[in-house]
Amino acid sequence: MMDLLDGIPHTPGTHEPLGTGAVLLRGFALPFEPRLLAALQAIVAEAPFRHMVTPSGHAMSVAMTNCGAAGWVTDRTGYRYDTRDPLSGRTWPALPEAFLALARAAAAEAGYEDFTPDACLINRYEPGARLSLHQDRDERNLAHPIVSVSLGLPATFQFGGLKRADPVRRHALRHGDVAVWGGPSRLCFHGVPSLKDGTHESLGRMRINLTFRGAL
Ligand code: SIN
Ligand code: FE2
Image (cartoon, rainbow, N blue to C red; front, side):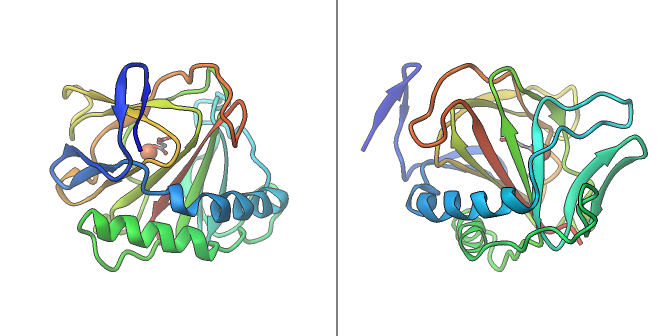
């Protein structure tokens, strides 16, 4: 199976290197899609998407929620992992079996055996939403890789180096793609520029990203 979007071939099953210890697994999440979407609905019913505020007071354009033992949150006091959803005061919904199975399988496919995430940040991008270049560095144990699953509308993934000023390469991210980065790439800068408008056949006018971490 191969489709062409923006003139770039998209071949599920291929591995595309992002850097040392970092790889893009094309279409790896596709077999999990029905279970992921059903589980996502249940999570969002308990812990809805919200636009969190950064320490500088700006509401993020990406709406977020979490599942797992800990969830990534930001507010005026800073970034942190919290075992409770600040909106409800309750613990976050548990990591669904399908999320765990996909995260573990993708990590193993990328060479990271025995990854058991305890946190999953769920990002919702609507057209125009973006995530500026950043490092994932709030996790306690950086020995775990990051496993990042793309669903819905296509996006561009900027993947750079360990310094903010390092050159950044751009990769297309499409429905079902999974990026894994760890080891020497674990702290690489990455970001997603403004999402283009469109309609996806199963998710509509949005992109969902699941980011699995070992946070605690
Ligand atoms: C993130 O860095 O948390 C999200 C990356 C993405 O949306 O692909
Ligand atoms: Fe990130």
